[in-house]
Structures are given as structure tokens and as C-alpha cells.
Image 1 (tube, rainbow, N blue to C red):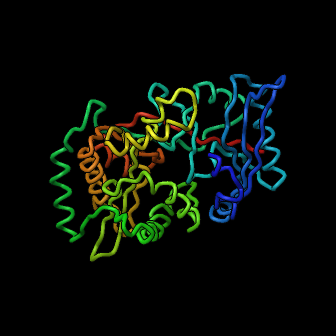
Image 2: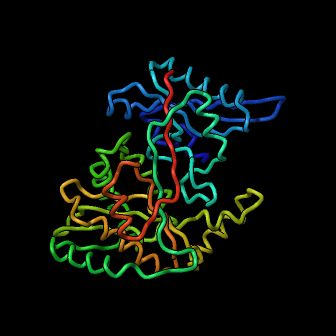
Image 3: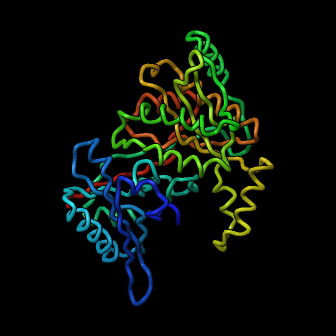
Length: 338
């Protein structure tokens, strides 16, 4: 988090800016917010949208209003007519306000907020812009075999198109990152709110993932040796960190790495799944999900979260339903005129 907020270390600040605000009452911190400008978003979508993120607040409307009005005034001064959020900092980072699924813990790189946040924002005049859906599959009781019909279907797909699959090659990590760069921006370019990640941002993200990435959970799909799609799943490190009650980094970090090494983490999150546009609709997404499910089960991971997905991404949601994933959490992006 410190690196994320650091303007000298986070490559987001090569094309964006932000200011951070705290709310105080009688010397006590009672809330926080960031006001954000993202040049790449506005260039791509030809709009005048500013953002807020890193929003935390006690259950007190005057405090929430003060924070949100401050962010609204900040973006309005820069010529924006809409304040959107929460996005911390962008759609490529943690985003969305949890509005359904409070009873289950959050997974790695997903936010989790109290139920009262939504009424605070709605009372402040914010309305829904888009919902983001997370789905769950597998079992918390331990690994279960992938559906047989999916296995048969995947074999047919691979044979029909003459495509192959392989895991990430960690010995050539930077070369693999370069392949991800080529696939990522092409794979998501038509999504609502999408902002392309710069080379520096992907390198920064890869550097953070490298110590904990499991090569078998990062499959590539190739045609004649050329990547046409990839998936990225990470073990849910929150499962290890959640036992740390005092907030101290030590020994939580050692506990996390020990559980990772000894295969004691039983949950995972599928962060990314990208396929080149010309290869969509051919069942390659099912092949990637099946690979991740199978390889995760071999490591003792029995449960996984897929998402987030845009609420109107019917094709992927239906494909996941066939693979026995079910919606279980909803996050919301909200807008307000400045």
C-alpha cells in the first residue's frame, strides 16, 4: 500500500495524479479519501470523469459528505463533470463498493467494506454506474474433480483448433511478462471503463506477483507457438494474513510464505483471463478455467473466486456457470455529477 500511494514508485503517476485527504474530529481520524485524475481514461473514453478511491469512513453521513464533497471539488477544479468510484486508483486496481456478499471474506486484491457505505454514498447523491460480479467455484471442504463434460469439451476444442496449453515459464519470467503485455490490452480493450495498462504498470505489477506466483496457475494458450490467450490465478494470500490479529508485518509475512511453500493455502482467485478478439467464442475460456481448476486441485486448492466481471458480460458469466461457478458477490461503481 505504501508503494501504491508513493508518487515516485507507482507508475500510475506517469499519466495520473491524486491528492489524499483525511477527515478529523476532535483529533481523531474518522475517514479518508483520494481524489484522482486519470488522463488515459479520459483520452480513451472521451469523457470528463474524475475518480475517488481509498474511501474509508465511520458510519456518519456528515463525515462521508465532507470527504466526498472534497473529492468532488478537487476533480471539478480540473474540468471534470463526474465523480466516479471507488477506484483505487483505476479499474486496473482495487475497485468497486461491496453491496452484496458481506458474509464471506474478501480475496486477494479485492476490497471489503461495511454494509453502511452504500447508504452513505446514495444519500450523498451517488447512483449506480455499473455492477461487478464475482463468482465462486469448487469446495471449501477440499479439491473436487473438474466436471467431466468440461474435460471432454476442452479436449475437443484443443484438437479442433490445433492449439496447445502450457504454464508460465518462470525461468524466462520477463519474456513471459512481455507476452502478457501483448495479450492484456488487446484482450480487454472493449470493456466498459477499460484503461490500458502501460508497460511500466505491468512491469510493476509483475514484480509484486513474482514471489508468490505459481507457474501452473498462469496458463498460456498458443496457436503454432504464438500466444492467443492467458489466465492468471493467485493463491489467496489473505487466507494466511487473516490470522494476523495485531496488524504487524512480522510474523505474518513469514506465515504467508510458509503456507504458500507447504501448500497450506486452499483458496485462489482468478484475476485475469484474456483472449485475443479473433479467438473469442470458441471455448478457449473454458479451456483456461479447466486448466486452472485442475492444476489448483493438484496443489490442494479446492475453492476459487473468478472475477470480477462486468454485470453485462453474459458470455463469460454463462461460460463460468457451465463450469459450475455461481455468482456470490456484487461490487458497485457509482457516479455523481460534480
